[in-house]
Picture 1 (cartoon, helix red, strand yellow):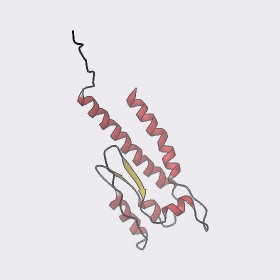
Picture 2: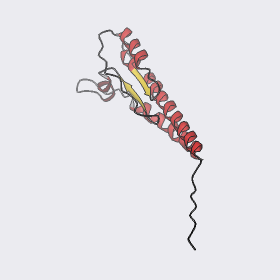
Picture 3: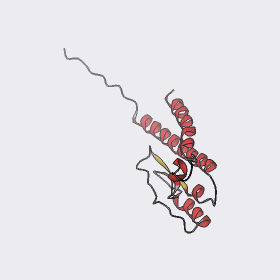
Picture 4: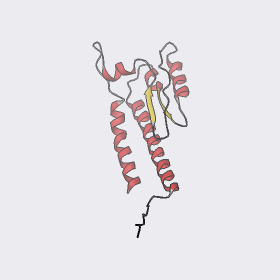
Length: 135
């Protein structure tokens, strides 16, 4: 007598809903990073702070934020916009060309971390929210 195989799989709509919830957590986390980085960024003219932006699969606030940055310093140099490759990723970036020099310092200026601490702060939120989803 041949054996009977039973396949157990979650309903397709459940996986779709789970993916949508994870996508929301990713987006919320990205905007939390942006907000925290802006609060912690050192301010001279406000160019650096205003150049911090978030890009998700569905939208980006690059244009809006870099317009604010340009209003503070029309001659400031901006990096091109980064794009998110999918719904489970988001990019938080600093468009101000000198952003890494402020974060990590140079031989002429001490580091003034604002971005990495924002990531670390948001990591706890991200982990907690994912934990809630899988319980």
